[in-house]
Length: 116
Image 1 (tube, one colour):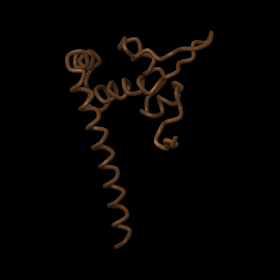
Image 2: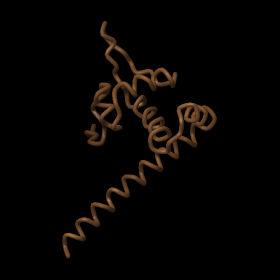
Image 3: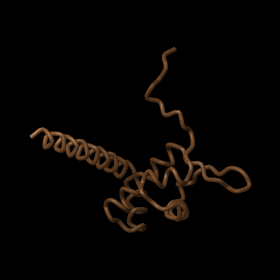
């Protein structure tokens, strides 16, 4: 049995970790949980500590793309997600890829500028 190096070993993420991934406040995530019924992280213990899975993070990525990146209001984001879930997912993935490509190109440009 081979060791899978690409596998994410972490099963759950705290609200603080997820908020920092997207540059959001923890209160924003809590509010989104009330607005988007399918975004329900697991809670544990009497303190109801939120535990986000990879699936929850993908939901947040989609909402973040629609609301923060593309500038939709919450009502419009809900409508887009309910009407065309697959299209919204694909658009979010494409924007993430393009953002990563832009960052890589900017790093390459800085390296090339440093060579001159």
